[in-house]
Length: 279
Image 1: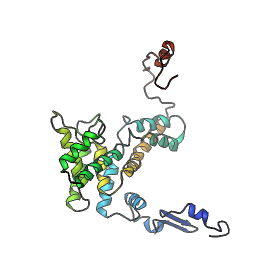
Image 2: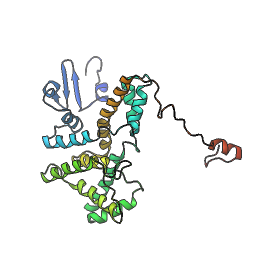
Image 3: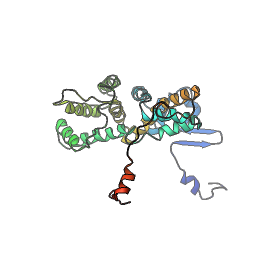
Image 4: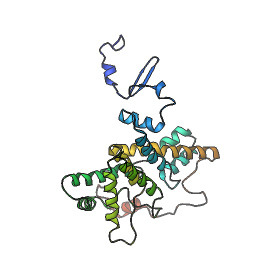
């Protein structure tokens, strides 16, 4: 409390355990920033800021592996394509990065969070008394047709799967992580392969979901951490596009024009038919 805030209500309104800033003082989770500079990696800082305490070297290494793996997937990813298009519109790097990050929603960027929820449900049923296979079968059968974290549009087997899951398995053997979410993920993978000529292996979202969950991050932070990771690739693509000097880059080359189809709205108006909500 002081003359500006005599009751302390303003200070209480913005009370936080994340950081402390006063003239000459910057503390992050109670640690002076000058003690962190040059001694703490960015990955360890992410952990510290989210969890309130520093990770062990093994925890930091596993988190870093997940962050590195999801950095980029080329312009096939909508967020990357949007970053490149936005960069040519004259809005600057910050605008291009923000435009791209804002596309990381439930359908693009949210599968990691959803996969953690899927695996959590399996483990909850196992803890309630079901064997792992039965718990997996039940949860998968109740889940919507699309299972987050499994299968890939481009890769028959995601090249990021094996190295990531190998690291998780080793961390489980070393006692760094429990290994439960890894067991659940592999059980889903095995269940999906039953009776199929081609298996449906885990993709990057499933693998990183396992890592984040094994490290104790709740499901929403699986998406948040993916956003941090993918932002690096977004920035790189936005900067490359900026240096190429193109203006107003659209989603397809100018030599290709979109196909024209009948307007369904006009057709409804002409026939007097509208959707369930009326005109």
